[in-house]
Each structure stands twice: as C-alpha cells, then as structure tokens.
Image 1 (cartoon, rainbow, N blue to C red):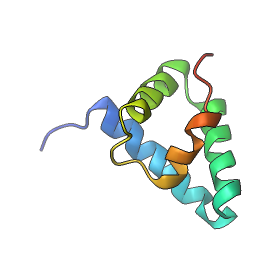
Image 2 (image 1 turned 180 degrees about the horizontal axis):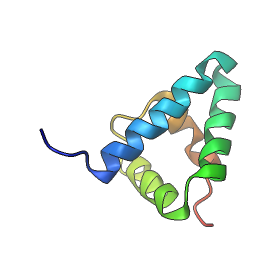
Image 3 (image 1 turned 180 degrees about the vertical axis):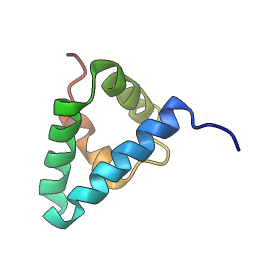
Length: 75
C-alpha cells in the first residue's frame, strides 16, 4: 500500500472537517470549514489546499470547494 500524497492527506482532512460541519446546514458549514482551516491550518497547508482547488479540487467535497473563497491565501 502506498502512502498518501500531501494533496491526498489535505483532501481527506478538509473533507473530514466538512463532514463534521454538515449538520450545520450548507451555508453555515461553508463558513465553518473556512474558519476552521484559517484558524488551525498552517499557511503552507492552506496554500497547498488552495493550489489543489485552483487545479480543480479533485476529491474535495462541495462544502470545501465552496469555502475556497473564504480561505486565507496568506498568513
């Protein structure tokens, strides 16, 4: 079995966050996903996630994709 790539790891983590906030309703979940990523992910992780989103975001759940515009690109 191969180890996950960084992109796969970040995708899995972001989707887990979105899954946690799913009961909040779509609009609130999107805001909470972005708030969580902004508060707890280091800038390098955010940049890598945003780069993946810029390339189409394969594997990311809809709330993560919708949160892209709310995720800080800089520290």
